[in-house]
Image (cartoon, rainbow, N blue to C red; front, side, top):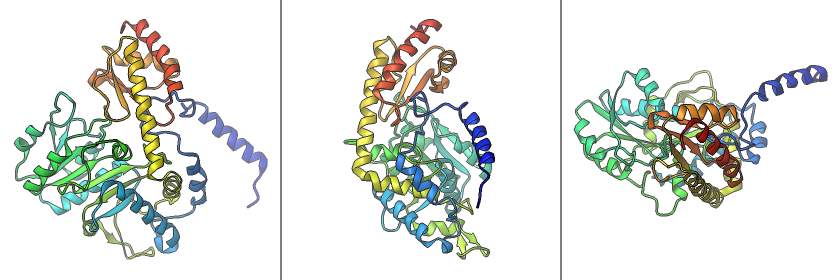
Length: 380
């Protein structure tokens, strides 16, 4: 195709105009997002597969093979058994929806027990599937209160959700105890590890949270968070590959007879990007990224405390909650100065997510601004 250079130039001027209004990961000033600038190798890989539809794998068998290799690489992080399978999804929300869709097909009931720090996607799930959510209080360390779980279980309970890396503070629910309860009560246990899935396996002496626990039924993880890849991509793992039959439908217009999952057409771009990153980094590369992020998290914690502010709890993952009396006001002023942090007003704090683009240099630039703003609004 021959392109009109003048028209191309005009279109890209428009694109640059819109892009210039966005905040950027590249300068480190996005401190409240669980996404990051993708690894450089992800870009070229993504573009190479722009025309590939993984919803029609008979036309693109090589791309389908690549997807399965990616699922295999990732599944080893979570000790998936031979009976298990993985399904690529657009991210944590779709992974959570699909997991609970399957759970509801497998087990009669319409009540689902969730911790109060669960991701907001479960509100969508409740609306879509006519499910009653049963929120359980958190303990003083902001994890689900195990002692309250049994009180809420009844004949109508079909699923329990545990979180491995909460969006609020990055805490990990006591998954071992949840596993025991769900095994005993014959309840589906889904683990939302969208953020923590690419952090926890690389931490020393971490508690089990995955399929090494017999009560875990499914687990979702995101590549576009700590997987260091392009938006959007997640993987949902299921203990039993036959469970996909519960949600598969006849697909007469494409190259396969049945298709499972929410999406029909699926771009192979994100799959290729994630595959390229995993092949380039390997498990050891991911471990080094996590170690660096955790080191910067501890550094940020010390710097925050040095200006007279407190952390809401000791960080487990690379997320910090900074206690404030009026977080909304601090966020407003920080935003005017070009810094974006997470709004955790319901916990009286702001959230700082120490993603790979957040370096010690970025922290050194941010802390004086935070101190200035907090002095201005009367926080310190």
